Amino acid sequence: ALGERPATRVWQVKDGQCIGRAGAGLQDLARPAPRLILAAAECAEPVSETRHEALPVELSTTVARSLARIEDLGAVAVDPAAIPMAEAEFIFSGGNGVKDWPLFHQTAAALGATEGASRVAVDDGFMARDRQVGASGIWVTARVYVAVGISGAIQHLQGIGACDKVVAINLDPGCDIIKRADLSVIGDSAEILKALIAAVAAYRNDAKRDAA
Image 1 (spheres, rainbow, N blue to C red):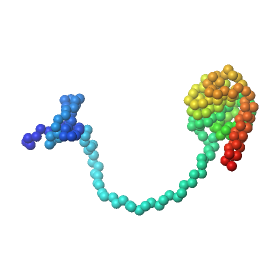
Image 2: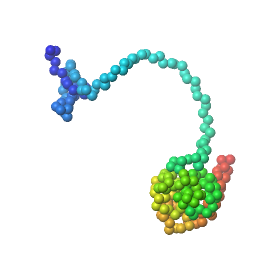
Image 3: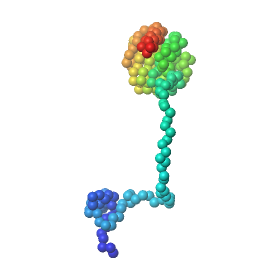
């Protein structure tokens, strides 16, 4: 009646051209945009019964009170024992080869590491069950994993597979944990742990002198 040939199923109008679906909807047809355009169904907003209203909003020009000066108090000390094993970045883990457990705990505290253990150490009652590392315990992703007196059973190696660096302290140079380790220290664990504590203390003393 209007003498117009509308463009149907149009999904794009640009630069005087319109593109609409053709045939079974598998092709696009481009043509000069006529005065009458019927848009494709997907171009329309879904029909809903929700009524909307637009109102002008006056924005406040009052300047907010400036924040008090922020003081950096440094890093917050975190108890390594409170860090979940799966999230710990530095794990100090003990196994059947640890003969002096108080010394083990002292070394972990000096290093600021989260304590872990092999299944044997847990079964023997030296560490809590939630500290067990391995396929039958907790899979860990620490940046540094130190294994003290752990031979390296397959279940334990599976649990530390995603760790970045593994350090092994063991008397047996042929055990499986040595093959997995990035750094191995062969010797009596008690003597090595004492040396670690002394090295940490010396490092911190030097740092205090430099700061003074």
